Length: 338
Image (cartoon, rainbow, N blue to C red; front, top):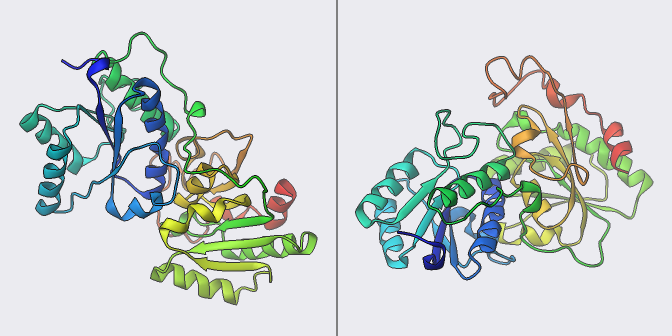
C-alpha cells in the first residue's frame, strides 16, 4: 500500500495541447509541496517538448506521451517499466490514455489516478463535472487522487490562484516590447487582424518608442497570416518573428504586455510573468483564463444566445458575423490598456 514516505517517483500525464501543457505545471508545483523529495516527471506530446528546453522547469524530465498507434503504446510501456513510477496521475484523461494507463495499471500494479473532466457521474474527484478554471480542475483531480489513497491527511484542497504556472522570470529591466498574439487554432477565436492593425497604429502614434512583436510559426496557416499582416498596413514598429518553439519563452523575458487571442502563446506569456489582455469569443473565460484578472484582463461579450444555443460555448470553426469578437474596437482596447 502506498504511503507518503514511500512515494519517490511520480509521473504526471497531460496528453493535450501546448497551452494545457503549460497549465499542468501548476499541479506539478503543488505535488512538490506535498512530496518535496520525490522525483516528478511530466508526460506530454513529443512535439511540445522543445518548449521546455530553455526554461525553468518544476519537473525532472519529460516523457513522450504519444499514443497514435501500437508502436507508440509499446514504446511508452517500455519507458514506464524502466522508470518504475510509484504513482501516475493523469490530469485530463482521454479515451486513448484511459485504455493505455488502465491496462498498464493491471499489468504492473502501478497506482494510477486520473481526472476525466467530462464525466458527470459521481467519482472520487472533488466537484466532478463542475466547470471551473482549468488549473483548479487539475488541482482538484490531483488532490482527490492523493486523498483517496490516503497520501494527504485533512488538508484543504489547493487554490489555482496560488499556483500560477512558471516557465521563467521577466528581466529586471522591463522593456517597451508589446507582443500581439494573432494566431489561434480556430478562426472564431481570433480578434480581427484589421483591429490588431488599428491598435498598432494607435500605439505607434502615442508611443513611437514601443516595439510590437508578432510571433508566428512556419506552418502554412501562419504564413498566410504573415501575408495578410503585410497587406493590412500595420504600423512601422511591428515586427513579425517566426521562432522555433524552444525560443518562444525568451520572447517574453523583457515584454511589457501580451495582447491577443486565447491561445497557447497567451499561457506562455503569463508563465513568464508578463501582464496580459485576452480576447474571448466562442468560449468563456471561466475555464481558460485561470489567472488573477486584476493583472490579466480580458474582453468578453456575455449572454450571447448564439454561444449558448447548444452548450456553454460555441464550437464553430468559422462564423460570418463574429459578433462575439469584432465589436471590441481598437480604440477601446487602447484606452483600456494604455
